[in-house]
Every structure is written in C-alpha cells, then in structure tokens.
Length: 153
Image 1 (cartoon, helix red, strand yellow):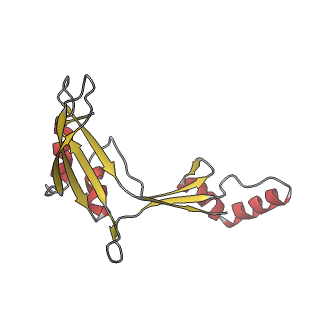
Image 2: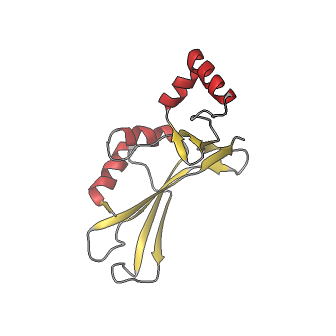
C-alpha cells in the first residue's frame, strides 16, 4: 500500500511520463478491495530514468548488479580485500591448507533493461492501482522488471 502523494512524486521525478496502458480490472472482491479498479501501467526502456528518480528519495534503493556466495550477498568491500595481492596470497595459502575463501562468487544477478533484437525487449513497468482499497485512501504500486541470473560454478 502506497500513499498517492508518494506515487505522484515518483511520477514527477520521472518527468511525468505518459501511461502505456490504462485498463479497468475486475477481480474477486475481498472485504477491503473494490470490486473493480483502474490499472495504469507506465513502461520504461531506460534504467537510468528509474535510478535517477529513485536516487532522489531515501526509502528505496536500486542496485543494478549483485554478486552472491550461495545465498549471501557479497559486498564491494569484500571484493576489494581479495583484489589486494597480499590478501590474495593469504587466501591462496589458506585454501591450500583446506579452508576456502569467504568471498567466492557463485552467482551474479543484474537488471536487464533495453531494446532487444527484433520483438524481444526488456522493460521496466511501474503499475499503479489508485482505487484498489475500500477502507483506506492508498493505492498499490508494483515495479516489474527482468533480473538475469548467471550461475558461476
């Protein structure tokens, strides 16, 4: 649930884009939902517009590329320690004695946005349901994007 003023500020930070699609959506009605609502979709093919708009606030951050060791996220600080030649030598010595380095990268995730080849595109959709709830004056916002995940073995 998102206040309408927050979504309006996000649109202002995105230079007031035109909606890509506006549809009336009917759904099964729970006690707090309206029986039908309007669904407004804004579509972006440039990730820099989104990152610039999200940089103006401090509630939500966007990271374009993340490296993983299993299910633990590897920070840049951990990578820099291994990039140092002395640290790399110590890591090689400890690996030779049976212990593996902590910062081994097993997977990389990155956002893919842009025009593809032919009809294949990767876009960021910001979807807004302004009057979804009956009991409160809030809307629902959804940001849909494609995350490419590469396994490193």
